[in-house]
Image (cartoon, rainbow, N blue to C red):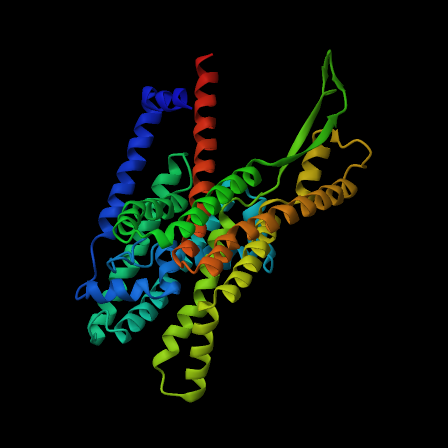
Length: 423
């Protein structure tokens, strides 16, 4: 591990990439410290501390709600746009073909549509968030010009973060959007430790022990599931071309237990935020029926057990959904057949695709269940010990550990590539 870290800074190209990414993260944290005009910081802190929904939204957006910064929406609109585009691949064949069959060019165009869709979504979300915060007296009453100008500023902040994320992704070391969320989570660790030190008491020791135990379980579980894979043996028939013999070797097709990585967690959080946001937005409407619906949504998603069940189901469903979008057994079977490969005991073509589909379904079931359990395990500990901070800790650990693992894999790939070049 220390050898790899030393190599990172001895190879000029990698050193420049890492320093560039660190510089981008510094820019992100600077923009996160610039508040929109007229924010009552004391009221904002008390509001965030007493609202589970906005506490989760703050983590999801990268910690940019702490002072109601100009990038308060984070990359949420872009992720929502990506979810909508992924859902459309199940409905519109053209989008599925673009994403799965047209290679890097098709995926680049697909992501461009998601970025364009993020613009109107950012306008709508900025309007709803500004109205909600104004009703809570966190920001002063705004005029029409104030609404429009703040909406433009917040939307521009989201587009700016999208651009920063793209710059990080282009360097080939990790996913830029995940990096920004990771940076927001990590930046809050010193402040959280400071608060715990000032409020330390002997009564909280069992809660601290529970938090450490759950954290270790989450970290170990995410590592095991992320690294676990099923190797399907594939043999290649011998082919004679002229005086040369090709094939005649055996290899394996790796099927990962968690094919979707951290994406199901991010997707699940982005969806579970909406009911609470809608309930809070409707809270001030002077209509008994609307008020009843608002109260129901707020109370339901402030209930740890209801929230935990919904969170578990969303993580589980999105694990299957994203795996189905990114891994097509039929296409894999066709590629293996074109290269003269076959799975022992399975006919090429459609039977191979069905065989791979069954294996992928079983291992994704295990991965989705485990990932869902790990996601809600801190909620169960919170329900037992009554410490609401643990709720956010589990989600944050899931994202942080998954991002670190993915980044380490890409760094290893960069180092291996350079070792081959030296040879």
